[in-house]
Structures are given as C-alpha cells and as structure tokens.
Length: 360
Image 1 (cartoon, rainbow, N blue to C red):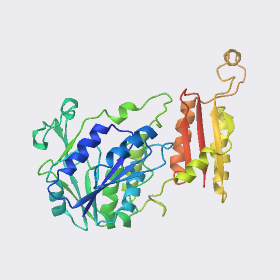
Image 2 (tube, rainbow, N blue to C red):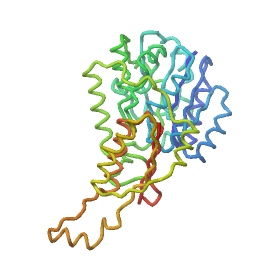
Image 3 (spheres, rainbow, N blue to C red):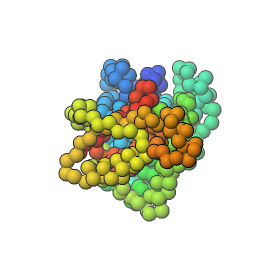
Image 4 (cartoon, rainbow, N blue to C red):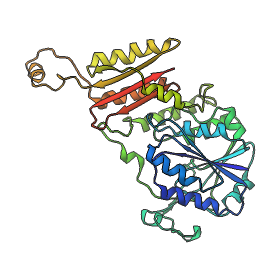
C-alpha cells in the first residue's frame, strides 16, 4: 500500500479534480490519499470537502490553521502521523499522474531509500486542457535539484520526526528532509528515466510577496531565511530537528478559545512593540500557563502634522514602526520560538490593525 500525501490551502477546484482524476485512472489501485487542508477559507473548505467525498480513496482532514501562515512541513507531518502504510509519496495538488505511476512506485519501494521523481512542467495554456497523460506537451522538465515529489519509507521519516517545522511559507523543506534522511543512513536517488508526473501551471508563489502589509500572511525575506536554515542543518549534519510534539496542530477547541480571549490594545510605538516582543511575551511564555490577545494599532500621533513639524525642527518625538515592520517582526518571532503553541494571527481587512493571540 502506498499513501499519497497532499498539503493544501485555498487552491482552485479544477487542479484538484485533474490530480485526483488521474489517480482514479491508475492501473494499480493499491494506494490511498491523505488530503490535509491546512486552513482554507470556510467557503472553499466546504466546497472542497464536499467535492472530495466523491473519491473513495481520499481521506480528508481540515486543520484549524486559517489564522496561521502556511506551513507545508506541519501539514505533511500531520499526514505522516496519520499514515499506517510503510511507504508514502509526497505530492503537490498540481500533479497529474501517469496511469502507471503507482505500478512504478510499488517497484521502487525500499525501506532504506528515498526516491524523488522527474516532473514535466506544463505551460499555462496547456494546463487548462483535459487530455490523456501522453498527449500533453511539456514545456520543460525538472532536474535533480527539484526534490519535492518523493517516495519515502514512513518508518525512517518518523524516526527523524518528520519535516522540519521551522520552514514556513515557501521553500527548502523538501531538500532538507532528504539531507537529514541521508544523515540518518538512507540513500536518496533521482528517478529520471521518464516523466510520470506533470505539473499544472500556476503563478510563482514568490511573485505574491509584497513590500507592504498584506492580508495573506507573509514575512519579507523568508525564502532567504529558509535557505539559510537549510544550510545550517546541512552543516551540522542534523537528522532530528523538531520537538517531540512534531505533527501537532491547534485543535478546534483551542482555536475557539483564542477567538474569545479578552483583547488588549497596544500601539505601534517602537519601545512598546520591542518591549512586548522581547520582554513581556518571553516572560508570559515562560510561565506554566499563559494566554494573551492583543490588537496592534497605529498611534493617532504616528503621522500627525504636529509630530512631523517637531521632527523637522529637531525636537525629540516618539518613533513608530509601520504595521508592515511589526508584521515581519512578530510573525518571525512567532514562527521561530512559539509555532508549537496555539496561536492566531490576523491582519484586518482594511490593513490598519494586527490581531495576535497565543496560549499554551
């Protein structure tokens, strides 16, 4: 039995349908799918869950992480801990599978080898077509540097406690787990005899990164930081990196509790934010039981004419962070030190406030 793992959030239904339809056409049916929805919007979640129910080989899980940044590692770790087969294949929901893909994967199974696969990338125009696998025109192929589509021995992955959950948003978690499995004694091989996977086109995720505050949770420079973390794990010959609580996510009850905490307002003055991040939050987290909910707003004097005049004539005025600067500092602080806690992070629809709640 092969378990195929999908990590998903807020993607369009058509690409899911093409991917799962291609699995329904497999010549070997000895597989199942664990589909982890990592906090899609409620309307999308309801549509996806209802639609997926028509595929009997798919098991759907919704996680209450809509108010947390995307973390593919946590989504996959959750799925891995739900997996009871000896082997799993990590896939993207963009993949279209060759009808004999499962046949080949079953042949390639090995308890001490990770195998990752060559992928054919489709153009935007080609991706909207509905064709037999062999009739698609491939724009280009991946090489050995693209490590994302991989067959894993589940036991070995569990021994190293899964994907590194520091990696948030975009990049590096797939190469990192290959490196750490090598350090754990596994072989890693690249299958490139034939492309048995086709990737449906989508815009590059990094193009969505903005220099201004965005409701989609982002951190400026996160791709470079993830790469640095990848290099650090490699330099240290790391194998296990997660806490013993790997693969755990916020429960529905904890999520609802966070929504009902009393809210304290603070403003964007530099000294206030720095003290909260580096003093108050640390002291609270250090206690046995903490819970806090804050609403961060721009101070009324932040952009006042009076303050601008004072600053121009050399008078001392309070310094303020922009909400974008606070967003990057607070989110980075959270994913670095507190991502294993129950927490919620939201940017208001008018982009004028940030809500943050956390408890253990």
